[in-house]
Amino acid sequence: MSRKQDAEKARYWQRTIREAARSGISIREFCRLRKLKVSQFYWWQHRLKETGQPRTARKPGAHGGPPSFALVSQEPGATDAGIELVLGDGCRLRIRRGVDEAALYVIEEACQKYACSKGCTVVTADKPMQPIDKGLPGPGLLAQAASCKYGDHLPLHRQQQIYQRQGVELSRQTICDWMRQSADLVSPLYELMEPRVLESKAVQTDDTPVPVLDAALPRTRTGRIRTYAGNHPYTGYDYTPDRSREGPDASPREFHGFLQADAYSGYDQLYADLCVDKRVSWPEVNGLRARR
Image 1: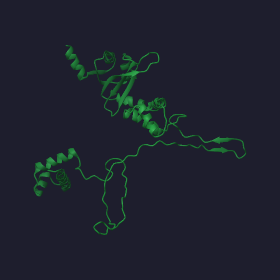
Image 2: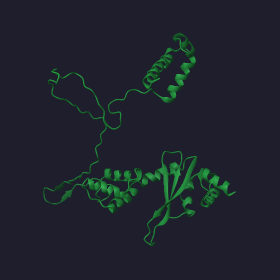
Image 3: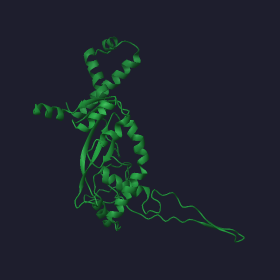
Image 4: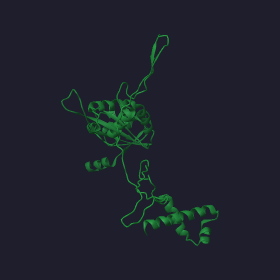
């Protein structure tokens, strides 16, 4: 059966199931009157409940993004065959994809000055609020730089090259300072997210080593980023400069439930002090079996 035939059959059974629900009689009686198989009725009812509505034809603009419309026309005239063409009532639609590259622009904010008619004082209007005080970027530029770096894994030096192609010179150090100040701006969100993650019945945690620049050392040192994932759609991150026990003890002090972690000994005191049940990950269980 082709996809088109399957969609038509699904729409037919969808209408039939709706009629049965509105009829007010039992499904067996409805199937007897319509000469349908009860087993087939239940099968289609279960299938439509799992898969949702049957697929319909795509509409203009359904490919993602806001739809745009362009009318393509030509002057009516005679063809090579000598047939006169006239403008009809309809048209033929063709769908394509397009993209508009994000463009940088400059916003000039003019703060009006007001002077007393008697010449006693001059007052200047307050400037609009800025995400970074006396800073160059607007909120949209900060959000794009942060989303590209942390969401799309686009390093700052590549973003610098993208801005250069658009005719804007921004140093990597400048963008790095923007990211540091953006972290301070979103810190209230982190303070709201962390306790909600720790409200979960079960939390999974692990640490990842990251190289950290240190002016006191001729090389990078190893820091740790710890993740805390619970029943919420977001994940909490916590940075510690090393892998000491103070790292695991810092964040989950208010947590009571099941904590899934590896066999790192830094968690042992946490299990002993708090009402936390230990759950070992499967790779660690396999490691324990191998050592035995």
